[in-house]
Amino acid sequence: AVPLVVAKSTSLSAQHGLLIKNRTAFENSRKISTVVFDKTGTLTVGKFEVARIVIPEHPGGEAAEDNLLRMAGALERNSEHPIATGIMDQVNRRKLSLPEAQNFQAITGKGVEAMVEGKHVKVVSPGYLQEKSISLPNDFASTSNETVVFVLVNELMYGYIALADTLRPESAGAIRTLHENSIKALLLTGDNEKVAASVSNQLNMDGYFAGVLPHEKLEKIKQLQAKGDFVAMTGDGVNDAPALAQADIGIAVGSGSDIAAETAGIVLVNSNPKDIVNLILFGKATYRKMI
Ligand code: ADP
Ligand code: MG
Image 1 (tube, protein in one colour):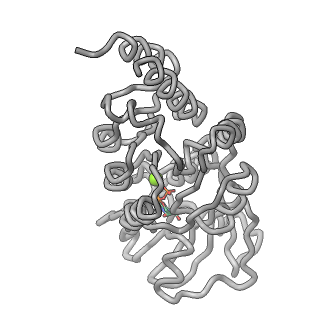
Image 2 (tube, rainbow, N blue to C red; image 1 turned 45 degrees about the horizontal axis):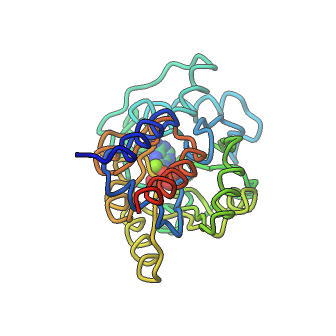
């Protein structure tokens, strides 16, 4: 039987956008010393808008931009990543018709690839370029709030798409409240260093890990635990499931994959970081009453 105080807090939590799947996770929420946040869709709105399209050999050429978008769109219509959604919005806005993509594949944590009109096309992260020793385009520059993906055709640089997402209005306040409760807030993201640093600074977080591949997320959580941290982690993707399972408390964000939600002890129905603060406060209040 669930003690009455817990049942009451559980229903209170539901009203605050928290789905508590595992009572131990709820009970342990009062022990949290560090919350590790994913970025996209949790601290940010999760809606990427295309800000710039750059083809170094055709600066400012709209036809060249459309061509690049057709290549990228042929791949991204097969992906559910928020970056893919942002690119497809732009494709639709320009009313572009897309060629067929064959042998579409995700490159986990790094991008997507397929054959388009007999050419091998990839849309990939800065980390992928670095790993393959492919140099950045000439005159490459990005601002601190841009997520950049590069379009490679037969392994050659064709151009890049810069996208921007916006911070959720509730994020700064959520982190402030964590600090008031002596809880640290860290950012863990596959996105690039500049974006991670900018989000971390704007929200006054305690640090960030950028360009982290899905399998490395688990290791980062283990490292924090080895230092004695009691870690809550948020995540959405299939890729986040192992790290969510490793965390002392796994928190799946609502819009994410079913696998993340199955693995996690808690689900944030509205993906709102403020609800994590409520979780911790409820947990403290509930178990204080029981002792
Ligand atoms: P996170 O969930 O922390 O943002 P992901 O593993 O989902 O990390 O993505 C990491 C990076 O991989 C993205 O920032 C992007 O550069 C690249 N990437 C992932 N999926 C796609 C995609 N569909 N199209 C282009 N790039 C992608
Ligand atoms: Mg993700």
